[in-house]
Image (cartoon, rainbow, N blue to C red; front, side, top):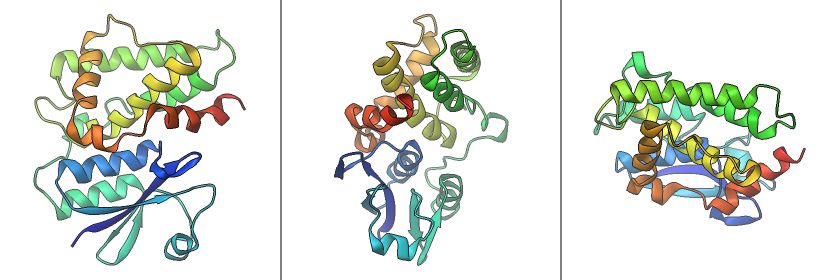
Length: 212
């Protein structure tokens, strides 16, 4: 029986997959594990009544499994790993927090109006740390095989590349060859191609925050 998953619809296009990196992380995991699922696109600015009835908090992603609606991508990923152990995607504990500060650093830099506030340097430092890690352990965070940490990072790096390129004309330094190779590996996976939001919807999703 297929699982049910609720994810964000695109801004201004309620029938198109939206730009939530946490929703994409869940979809990526379902795809990599070859689990059958039905997708419900939720317009977060106009949530359907049935969705609010099954999940009053109204946040996405939410997964229906064993007749229960489960929120929070971390919790969902843990349940999927437990119930569908093949292929194994659990990240070895020593690698599970690699890259964990990149997304926060990216958001701070994206929203920054002051070129000298250190947000760009903070992001560069996080990307440099990822470069050093991949140099020692790559091509993926835990070595040869993709794991949960990569599926969490992939959507966030996609947002970083698209949004910073659009709003700040900023790109990751060419000197970070392992990071560039890693991004190419992630973005070329079939699971990523199937679950990514179109670039225009990533931009539309960030525009209100950048212009705030």
